[in-house]
Length: 109
Image (cartoon, rainbow, N blue to C red):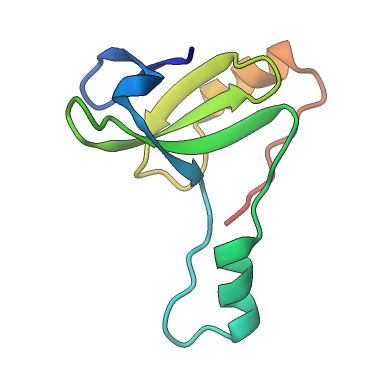
């Protein structure tokens, strides 16, 4: 079972108290975008075996959205951070690189 700490209220909760919201840091396309851009936004998602950045909502708590970095193979959680960011914080990226040498953040947005 995943245990994630909500960075908004500081509560550590089991995944049953949370709601997953898919991949984090996606560039959203709206009015004026091409059909190809909108199709890519709707249907093309990363499905990595390893480190992944996701959106979560503290559904049975404060109700706020946040981001989490975790390993999809081992379920290891590296950390959580505010959803109001465009990329993961550098200290979190360093923590991931220390445990997974060779890992490189690539901007999805």
